[in-house]
Image (cartoon, rainbow, N blue to C red; front, side, top):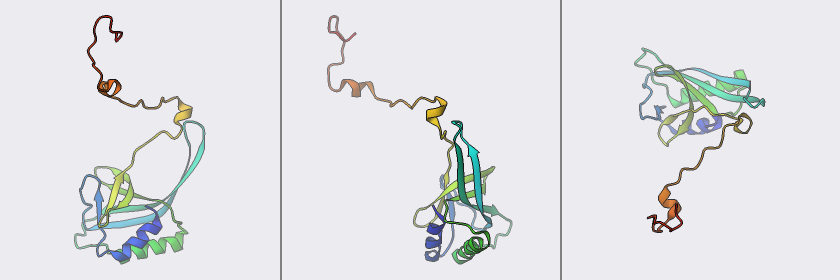
Length: 157
């Protein structure tokens, strides 16, 4: 989800709720402690230099159980970060600490913001010699509805 998307969704909401992909909710009393711009300059295993830019939201659980972040307040924080930091309309990455600090992509299901698990991947599979994953096919699919019994002299062996 890009920053412009969350900005268009927030005015329509009464509450801001984040949910992990496994269905667990981030506690209602979370804080958005940071909104920032993260730039990652790196080289992949194939030798290609890359640059990745993301808007970063950091969620934090405090012992402030009376705290509830309202959509208007989050929208204000976003506008402030755009104004003061010059943040552009990039994809959002959310940092949230469950058992360790995790980084998540962000989606919206019509009611809640969903923290989507991120996966690592090779960006240069053609350069590092990893063979493409073979398609798995059932032996029955290969033979179709043919008689699969093998008889001597039948040419199947």
